[in-house]
Image 1 (cartoon, chains in turn red, blue):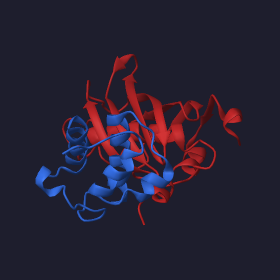
Image 2 (tube, helix red, strand yellow):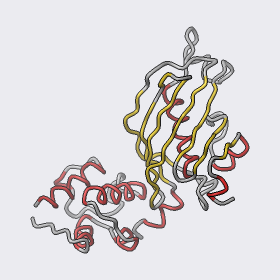
Image 3 (cartoon, helix red, strand yellow):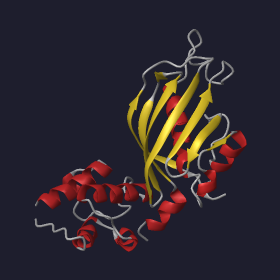
Image 4 (cartoon, chains in turn blue, yellow):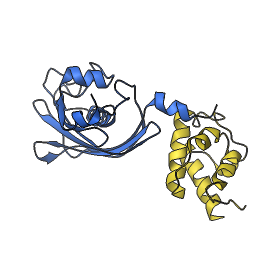
Length: 158
Length: 80
């Protein structure tokens, strides 16, 4: 499928798993909407009490751990560039996390909606920024740099 | 002098390294200058000097000193 045909499409779990290599228990997206390859993706993750981490975080007051919120942002970010022709299914690694902010607690029964904007992808390095919401309330936000090692290695000194 | 300070700062910030360790530094001499660190360094240099490096130059950029030679192609001078 070329980029033009994909623009604005929505993807469920089978397609998300085809585009990126994160898997249970570390796949933190249920659905991705309005994918514009090379530009934007909107990720959705709903947290039920059946999530594996709630009994441990915390037993008397369950909430979504910060690192999992950040990972959901990153996984939405992946969908902005692994949907570009030639990158489907590639492994990606985090390079930097910056300006990470948590604005509210997320509890069982809530859905996180993530909006991720890709600002550049060059030589296998993708940069972008995100905001996220629970309903209309701002949740976490961050800026990431992520690399695609298979592309990046072509530019390393011998 | 300003370019040299900028060049050194990019190295220091990219690899969390002291300035006195820059002379003689080569690719993969330190854990921070690995394949991922290399791309971060190239990206930071491009941003700091507002240039876009060619692929061959990125591949040839194998040391602190070699980097200065390569950046001279982009009209950057590094008077000590």
